[in-house]
Amino acid sequence: MVLKEIFEGIIVFFSASSSLISFTVLLLIFIRVRPLASDKAIVLTCNTYITLLGSSFMTLLITIYGIHGDLHPSISMDDYYCQLRSYINYVFICSFYYSCSLQATFRLFRVVFPKQKVLQSNYAFIIA
Image 1 (cartoon, rainbow, N blue to C red):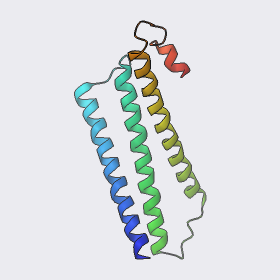
Image 2 (cartoon, rainbow, N blue to C red; image 1 turned 45 degrees about the vertical axis):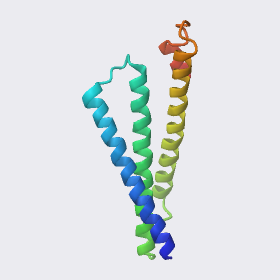
Image 3 (cartoon, rainbow, N blue to C red; image 1 turned 180 degrees about the horizontal axis):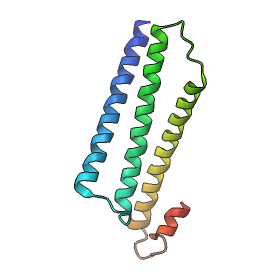
């Protein structure tokens, strides 16, 4: 029982830290860089940090509700909102991986195929 509480505390700490770091980096990007829609690299970076922020916040929320359910066993935690929170967390995690693959594709096209402008167009990234 104590080990579970320790692990839940660690999860809360790292989820909160990840949310705070992601929010800080996004804020610094918006203040210092001022991303434009034409700058694909910055937009992809912002997309990655937004999905990371959402995923870490949802993980924090799910863990807090789990701790609340452990402290109050009479309250039923098996409801629609619990499933919805988990689904939203999975959506953020999948979008994070998709965002990373889009960044990798962008870098591949920019570094390996710099002369082929078709691969660096907006249309290529809409398809991807």
